[in-house]
Image 1 (cartoon, rainbow, N blue to C red):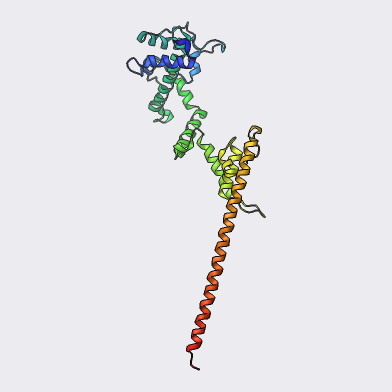
Image 2 (image 1 turned 135 degrees about the vertical axis):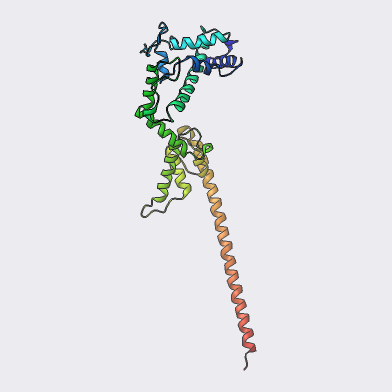
Length: 290
């Protein structure tokens, strides 16, 4: 039953229940066919439910619940007419409002792509292309799209999307974060200090990660320690450092043995060469006429 689940699970159950009946795009359809598209979601919560005639959204007491909106009530009423749901239940209302929020965002994006992006500003239609949306509300939406801040943000997002070449490697971090890290690494590699040996690529990567990453097992595996290790991890880091020191000693010992073996091989080869030259000189002296 519902009593055995938390609110998030209940909301998911409500959404599943609604989307299992017929077209899963019912919420999008209701928004597209009946709901005016406003610049921000918060504006849908500013129109009191008592107003029946469409007007420009007005400010609402922030302490009031977000459910007391004529737009929300309209959407819930359309869903209730098609599905057997209890719109008075708070969890059901929350789930339906989340569906409405997503549908409004998608429809706003589609309208911008169809009626705003392809045209210069002076050719954008000033008349609402949506029958149930007044020209005044359409102009309100246009003003938000035309604002310098909005246009600058859209252009930056567009440029960033164009610059991302390896989507599977960027994870959830912004593209610019990766660019900044790479630039920092390149600068450290190209910068040389008098009297100091240039850093290796591994050391540069370790330094940048140590500066920009809170916790990095990559650094520990390489044998580098973060500048400020956490107290709870000091013992394990000390053990790891000891193990790495032993490993480095073993590697150094192997390198010394290889070098000694190589030097011995070179000495043997030189002695063999001198011996062959001596034998050759002896033979040449024997065949020369007396």
